[in-house]
Amino acid sequence: MLFKTLALLSLLIALLLLKTMVGVFPSLIACLTRWKESVNLDASVQLSRNRDITALALIIPFCLTVSRFRLYYPHFMVGFTDNGRLATTIAILIGWMLLRTFLEHVFRPKKANPRAYGTARKAAYTFFSLLTLLLMLTGGIMAFVDAAPETIKTAMLWISATIYAVLLLRKTQILISSYSFFASFLYLCALEIIPTGALVASAIIF
Image (cartoon, rainbow, N blue to C red; front, side, top):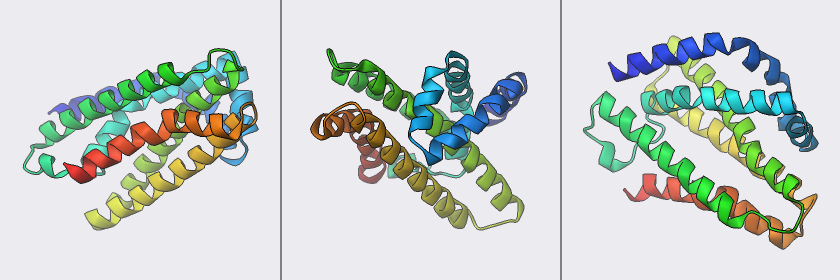
């Protein structure tokens, strides 16, 4: 019941924001190819706002996709009902987002150019949106052709790893454009490596 309710809610939100999401999509795709496109997107008030709205609207679909295809499925979730697995996935995602927000606040530059840091931080919203759309498309197509669940999961995990690798590259390029290599590495750790490492570790250890 919870899954169907959230799926219906996601559909209604998508319909309401369809124009916004379609309008910003070309800019999201451009960010895959050049790091300066992230700077351009962030410099536009309208595009930046639409990107943020799109990322927010895709949080629930992302959780539904992760839960449906068991992309995050640590041992402690074995035996959970579908609703329990979905609720736990949402709770863990919220915790992960809170950890990222805390680290972003702690490590944000006090004197150096804060704009590049902000652009690098918000690049995650861009790639999160692209990842969610790709996962939904992949899951839908492969499920439609009746692919094996493990095959679908493997394909989606490889897509996630690829998108994340591109995100790390683009963030590094954005940071290095304004900060030293050492400072850029510290910011990258704060923005991505530490929170994502904690998430991956939780899936392996628990």
